[in-house]
Image (cartoon, rainbow, N blue to C red):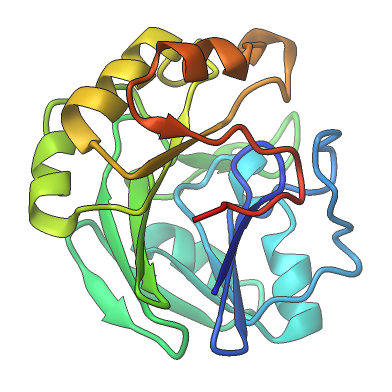
Length: 228
């Protein structure tokens, strides 16, 4: 069992010989260690439709024959590109070869843009995801502001071994809200900050987040693994 972080919101989970990638925004992401033309995947899980999360999904899936797991409207769009998809929605859980995926609420927005002058494609509701694999429970909050039902999500689905929480502010929670969400609402064993420093509006110091937390925090560089 291996869980690693790869810049922005990219997380890779490897279990029982299967590799799952969350939100593979690689091309255009200066903070990742991955190469979109070389990365391998059996499954890709998407939290929502924004371009900095869908990223290289279609290209990777076509090259590796990976199955894309996504909220239903986003799955429909991805599937229209000739990619195998599993469409799900908030509250739903599904079993796969590597473990299970459940989609939960996130408070954000969700659309995909084909180009600067193109219309937005509606891609459904934004989500957080819960992955269970190798005896571990992982909560990737996706892009979200803080909301009280994070505690309900934790009560019903936890305790979580790892919580990937956005700290970048401007588009998601900032550091103070992320600290409250982590310590008071989710209460995971380990918190890992994500979605920061990729672009100027989300510049943050993850060490500030770590120092404010009561929860164990691991600030990971791209390519580093969560240590249990």
